Structure formats: C-alpha cells, structure tokens
Length: 110
Image (tube, rainbow, N blue to C red; front, side, top):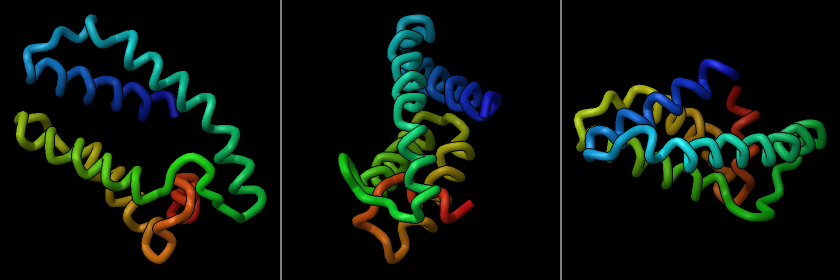
C-alpha cells in the first residue's frame, strides 16, 4: 500500500509538471487525497466483510469514468499512463454487471 500510494503521488506530480505546474504547489492537494483515502478505507473493509457494496456517496462507474479521464489526460500529456490504466482496468472488471454499486466493489476483482 505504501509504494502504490507513492507511485500515485509520483504520477500526479509528473502529470502536473507536464502542464507546467510545480510539484510542490500541488503537494497539499495530493496529501488531502491521501487523507481522504484513509478516511474511506474503513468503509471498504466494512463492505468487504459484509459482502455488500452500497453506493452511499458514489458508484463504481463514477470512479471508472474519472480514471478513464486520468488515463487519457496522461497519454495526452506524454506521461506514462500505465498506473492509471491498470487501476482503470481493475475497476472496470469489478464494475461489470455491478455499475450501480460502490467503488468498494473493487475488492471483488482482487
């Protein structure tokens, strides 16, 4: 989990730099995303334990759409899209037939 988080941070920094944005200027926003993930994580564990994936605040398809945009933006900026493409594929697999469920459904694709 540690290294995948830092890989995502590196990807975000590379994408920002490709658009002329200094990495340090987005560091606080990226740290906020890490904190948000830490806040959401226990809900993923709860859903996994119960085997249900209620879409209380968003659906897995909204996550897929967002990641598709990040993958496309990476390609357009000349940034290696391998990381967002892999995450997109994982979430797409989990969403198949379960589009209205929570993003926590990704657990089922692991």
